[in-house]
Amino acid sequence: MFDACPGAELVISTISTGKPKEGERCRISPAPSLFFNRFRASTKGDKRNQISDLHMLNMAQQLNTEEGTTLIPPQKVAGESRSSMISASFNFINSIIGSGIIGLPFALSQAGLPFGLLLLIVVAFITDYSIILLIKGGNLSGTNSYQSLVQSTFGFPGFLILSGLQFLYPFIAMISYNITTGDTLTKVFQRIPGVGPDHILAERHFVILLSTVAFTLPLSLYRNIEKLGKVSFLSMVLTLTILIIVIIRAATFGPQILPTENAWAFAKWNAIQAVGVMSFAFICHHNSFLIYGSLEQSTLANWSRVTHVSVGSALIISAVFAVAGYTTFTGYTQGDIFENYCRNDNLATFGRFCFGLSIITTFPLECFVTREVVSNVICSRDLSKAEHVAITLLIVAVCTSVSLAYDCLGVVLELNGVLSATPLIFIIPSACFLKLSTGRWFQGENLIPSILIIIGLFVMITGLTMTGLYPQDCSHGMEMFYCADANISGTVPPV
Image (cartoon, rainbow, N blue to C red; front, side, top):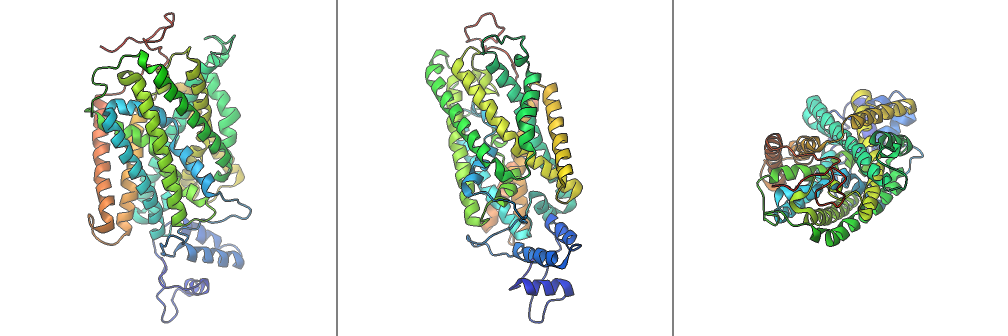
């Protein structure tokens, strides 16, 4: 970091000579980061590039945290466009509301309706707080990515742990997107006249391959996340449509299904598992620096506004969706809420279509993150066009292969929430901030981060234990007992 360096000329002189001018107290933090690696690489170029990079370096290291001050200016590439706050908000909301939203009614079934809603609000608040804390940590360390922030605070071991978690979460999320696409769209296609259970459009493997080649792969090949702003807006429209459908079915179909015993209990014993599902639904930290870097004006005020709007909107949508879904099916609620609806339900079929299309548009956002992690760990530089295409193809191919081999990831998604999402939300941002900030734990501004670390460790240990002892049942592809079609094999009501 630089202390009391008034201009770029002084910084250039300081770096080139290794000594500050008399009367000045300038220094460079020895903390390793991807930004400094790129800066060192840039010094191999001409003098003009060195001066430009040094000026960017000086800007990135300013510790002014006023709301109107740019915190971590990303490296701007000539001709690269930036997104507005509205576009960034759509990208952020789209990143939060992915396949995890369909598991939120099941989370209320685990925790109890009142207590589950309270937990959902708490998780959303912690998500909002830790996202802003993450960018503040980047400001304190002079870094502009999640990986470089952890590396600057906890060294290379911390960098590897974070990279593994940050890769694992979106990677498994992409697998779940493919599986959900295959499950939902096959039921949609079977409602087309002439398309029966033996038709190729009813084959989940073919549908997954078709959606990958036609949609997710081309969208994932974009290098600029800002270009997905319009696609994210479409995804938000589709999500709101799904929400309306679930609400309508809660009013029209819900009264036909008798509530289960203790359906309206305040709290239930396996609420910790519900926190894992909610964390999986709300995790978006792996996209934070990417979306922050896409802002036209990367200031704390703008970033806080984008974060509050995005997380608040996601909370409202998620809470309404969770309540409407749970009140419809109560104790019968499954991990994938669309598995609860009957196959001959045309309105639910339209909802399946909207949701399938929505998660197809969300897939590229997660691919951006996995590709960024791979490029940072392996290459430590910007990818060439050929490398960009090759790594994207490899990531998409592996995700597609796994999703073709497995059709039920309920337990895996729950573990992903406990083992990946929880440390990414609760523990790592707080630990980085505490490491970089002054003062003692549990005092002043360090109080909340300290508490979050304890909560995160408790959720991880308890949630992992509960998931192992009481794994989620998977009735994938089974017609529920309350559906009218007796010719299709179905489940029986719980005893």
